[in-house]
Image (cartoon, rainbow, N blue to C red):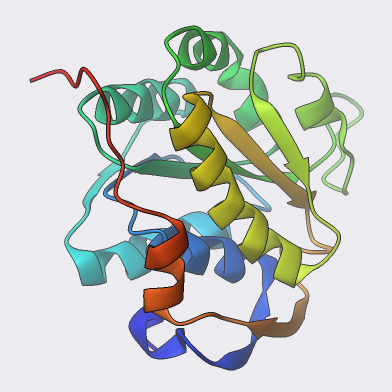
Length: 203
């Protein structure tokens, strides 16, 4: 089903797809990505959905580059979103500081996953909690509906305050399990989330 066909309906979706659909509903204009489990589904769906809007999409060679590309797109005045998890978020660390310092309104979906050895892929909030002093707002979600709603809220916050935001949800628990999602109509979302207005965009 196309993303545009999901708007204004109640549908069964997993957290990753809900995150991607929220990006579509927010009219994201640019996304640079590198996949890592368990956020891979969010990246794949985001790219699929944004294709309906002819948004700028880039596959990068690693997560640090993905965040740097998102910073550049945001500085150009484009509404920007990406997704990551665990070691991918750790690799973005340097760029997270840059994004906050440069006050770019990026939204980052984080499917939380454990860090470090011994190897562990299960849910653990330490990947995002370890980034709490980078200057990013962090929103933590309880269910699939909160994932969708929080991403829309994050876009509103970031473009109002010019501070980037992470929307965090537990990997595999929320990222992969499905629940009923009540999706607003596009007109309702547009009424709450006006077009991004960057005061001094780069040209």
